[in-house]
Image 1: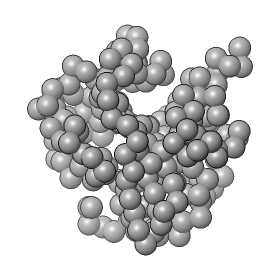
Image 2 (image 1 turned 90 degrees about the vertical axis):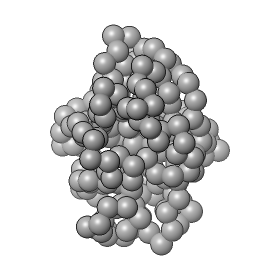
Image 3 (image 1 turned 180 degrees about the vertical axis):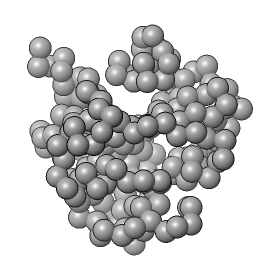
Image 4 (image 1 turned 180 degrees about the horizontal axis):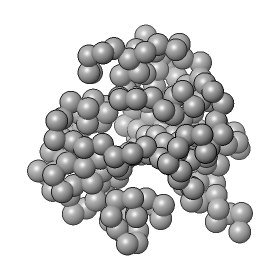
Length: 194
């Protein structure tokens, strides 16, 4: 029973439900672009693309993107690094039925930030943030741990996710906050979008 619970997250509509520390809660509820805040909080920001390919979405993602059961999606995974340190593992899925018109830049992002694309585009509608506590058995943490060479400890990690809509296409971004994010300066993002 415990193994199954580790594989799915319980997503909540309010950050208070995950009982994060005040500093972690501050990161979870970052308004606007997380990328802009990370850039403002560090000397050097980098997106490290880990994977971008077709896949079957996770069970706890299917409903969020309008699927009755897990099915084919386009998937992208990156590490967001500040001053060389990985601070966020980001996982994005786009429904396979979405067209290039819905998300024209998704397939060509490379190591550019998806966040800057989403917040620049006036056609993108942002849904409500959801929050979760996840443990090492969750598939996203398994993938993050593999990308980090097995250095993640068996502890609670905090995540947030949000569905974005552009035309008829749905895109789900999940961000898992890694402990080094708490070491970043408490800088506010620039008022200009990046």
